[in-house]
Amino acid sequence: MEPDFSARAGADTGLQTERRIAWLTLLIGLVAGAAAAIAGNWFWASGLVIGAALAWLDFRWLRKGLDALVIAATAQAGAEKPRVAVGAYFRAVFRYALIAFFVYVLFMVLKVPLASMVVGLCSLAGAAMAASVYEILRPGK
Image (cartoon, rainbow, N blue to C red; front, side, top):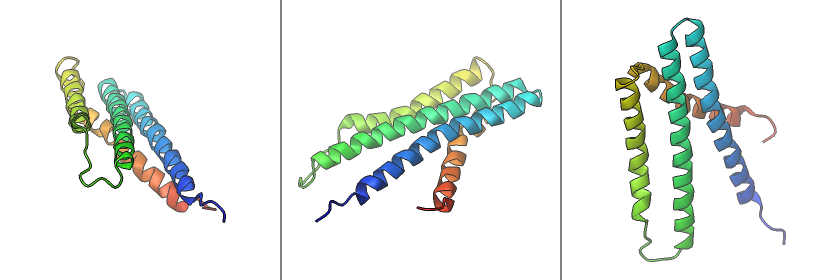
């Protein structure tokens, strides 16, 4: 009987997709920031890049949190009442609070336009869509 590597292959593909989303998030933010800088709007350019960097950071924190949750769930497989560490809930809420704090400080102190940072944060959504379309359209898989 041959071992089933289909689950591992799916995990490898998922890891590749996660990496693709991470670098595409930064790339989209940098390209948008460069376009705004070329247009002469440096404050918007900085906000777009800052927003993309915060989106990238949020994605990394989310990925680490989900990885920890999967490990905890796997370790407790078969348990009648599986437990989730309180820290997992705290980190889930804390990452949003930390991003909101950064956006607030940058808006109030450095006067970076709020809308530009929000649009920069949307680079994560664009990266996820681009990676999904790539996964659907790539030949041979």
